[in-house]
Length: 166
Figure 1 (cartoon, rainbow, N blue to C red):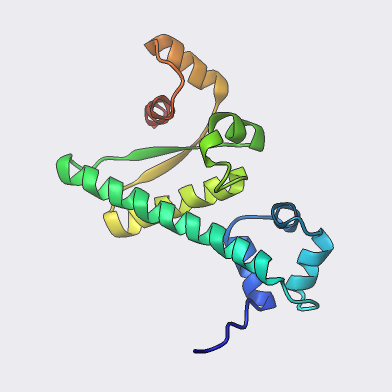
Figure 2 (figure 1 turned 120 degrees about the horizontal axis):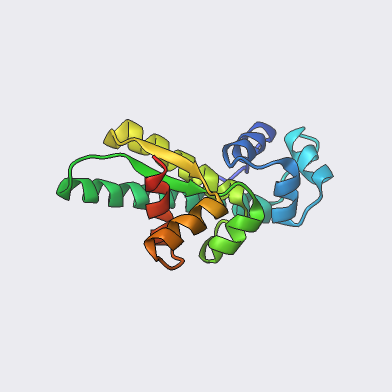
């Protein structure tokens, strides 16, 4: 069995960028310093194994969400004619945290959620030939939509609001 050599500087930087994270965010997520992240990306120090595993785990969580979501969309379109879909994305951490507490343990920052949504959008277009639009969440518009339709707060109602924005 070959020995795992870990991520090199290029791979660390690419992984961070593919997750749409800044060096500061990686430092915060891993409880390391920004200087540590910079040193990893400049090949000055090796990224510790637990940190590598943490970042690779986040990548795997996103990939699983993409696969599961796309499988659900594909199943839905077997029963219904193809149509456009809208996904809500959150413009800042406060809104993401307020409206998606269920995701915070696996995708703690809004950039990770948005990265997953972007990948789902691309996968749907390439594989399923489904157009997905990412709709930035607007609290006031959403509240007005709910009031008009006499709806409560839910993920499903945010999805209905997003679809109405198309």
